[in-house]
Length: 271
Image (tube, rainbow, N blue to C red; front, side, top):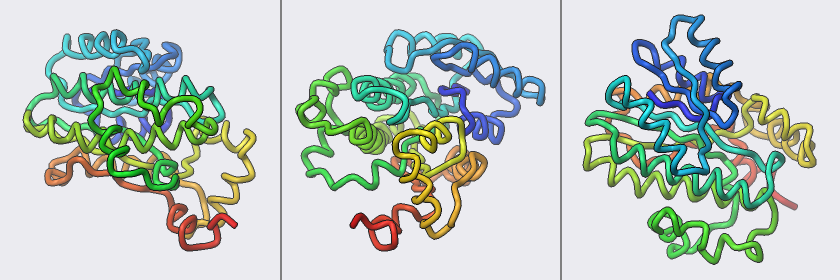
């Protein structure tokens, strides 16, 4: 199993489905990867930590090569990324948009028959205005190394780090749909999960950032009336990665306590 992104959501999913296999944990911070590996190893899992930069194809290929030393790759969990308060526009697009596309592409070349994957997207991709069918198609099918050159992703067309993040997450969902066709040729499946406000260190950065009041208002006024937990995301990931989800591929699952529903049709509607 490859786990990219040594955070709370990735670890929760890995703990749910990663028993009995070697888990290769990649993160831009080797220290973070080692911390998660240590926690899981002390709980009886079999993990190894490696440094990995999602924005680098070479780095992505290196973690795949490391994983293949232990056997066939059967599971992918991608929980790596940066948030609007953590990075500038260029970094968000390079990591969250381009990097995710590269990872899905490269793992899709080697995933074994019966293999499965999930990538963690975001509710943000569901709240931005609809793109045209042609724009969606470009996000889905443009050759990976040409993605960042798309006109819609140039500085004049990206209004803020939040807009960049929304575009990246919209692209994630479209790439999953396109990759599901390719993964299917190998007898494998790939899906995405779009969490809402989940209490993690990344989310706490957002609560304390310039949009903190916005996020606190969001979970207060969503139907669930609270933020979610990493384990609630893992509940859905477990289904998607298991034989019980065998007919599910190329799909995105919104797990946001109803925040998006409230944004369009409830008290969270923009005034």
